[in-house]
Length: 219
Image (tube, rainbow, N blue to C red; front, side, top):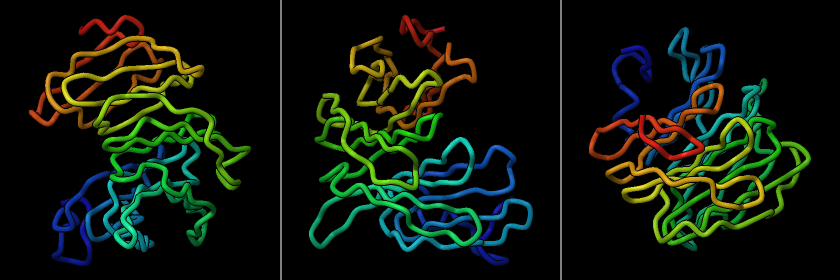
């Protein structure tokens, strides 16, 4: 295995829920039910263990300096998004309280690093904005996405797409709908081609589909 904790304990025993890798491939971050890590992929060393437990999703800023993690707090039961600056010694730079209560599901950071999108069960998709990822985030907009939203992603142009049971849907930066995409099962992951023209969606049935982002047509 490429990445292990120590010599014998694979990370998957901690019930992976999210995993991201920096653009240069040298560091990775995981979100898990019991433990979450920042890893050196070249040595398999754990550089830092995040204190967040019951983490549901993790997102990485385009410059690789910041990580956002959704976490569930049980007392009282609510969810929030914590933003970490992982340059040198990782440190918390901000938290979005009650961002996706009652249950966290997905988080994404925009390409310009000025917005965070969060989603959860029984909650709308929320768009948060700031002057930088080291500043305080303010709620910019809510987008109604139905009862269950499992994941969220930013397109290169700043548009937002979120995944629900059976379908995914996209909106522009003004909250206006763009298209919907028939995913087939519960949407488990969303990713864009570098030019933003194609959306790749995976579901819990193990299927992956490629869509034209603007039309919603399956390719």
